[in-house]
Image 1 (tube, rainbow over the protein chains, first blue to last red):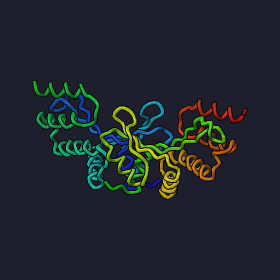
Image 2: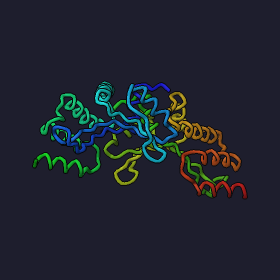
Image 3: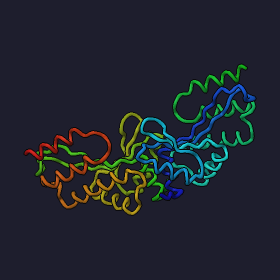
Image 4: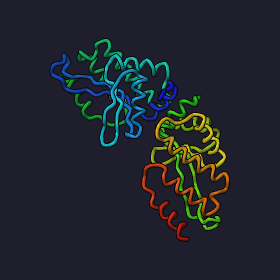
Length: 149
Length: 149
């Protein structure tokens, strides 16, 4: 299955997700690890589309997500940089593009090593809190901890 | 917002739905009315994408679906014929294409007026029952009623 750039943009506008989580990690300088990821989830009947995305983006893994659903997932920073480049050249048409722009800012900050100090980490968390629509109390807590500590 | 054919295919692979319902309608010859529709639902934040689809397909309506969600919906048979032509020339890449092929068969049967007699209606219901993944007890009941009556 060969995918065209426009098809990929349309499909990701529908099914893709740019997400950034932050986990406590005592060995890191700032005490936390930033985990950005790009994910597309499908029912197992369409697992071949996920493998086609993996080939298209030349990276990532396809793994079971939960129950009969599978995820194509990219976590590697260099691969995420290339994915950001692709979506800068082929912009998303839905409001997901707003999330993508924040995601890209985080990736660029990480490329510059900004996630390794407290100030950069706060900036990243602020951007992550503006992404997606769900409430993120854990991220809010980390932000408060960084502000106090 | 201008949409390319490939973007539309990718987006419909993710977000589109081909659906056929059958309703009791005593004034119709076979006693039932066949209602095929093509639907794309989005959160209201992306209502402009739905209007872009309406322009792209030169038909359909954008209406509130439920809560903060809106639907682009095409029910007109001639417009559905044109939509089928589009997706024959630009095939869907997910398993949604299997549903689409059945949907198209139903549209072609309706174009030939087959939905107006009992035999054609049974054929249409059989195709509709093979579409989508949810159970459809109401449609099963109509099928049994047609077989008995």
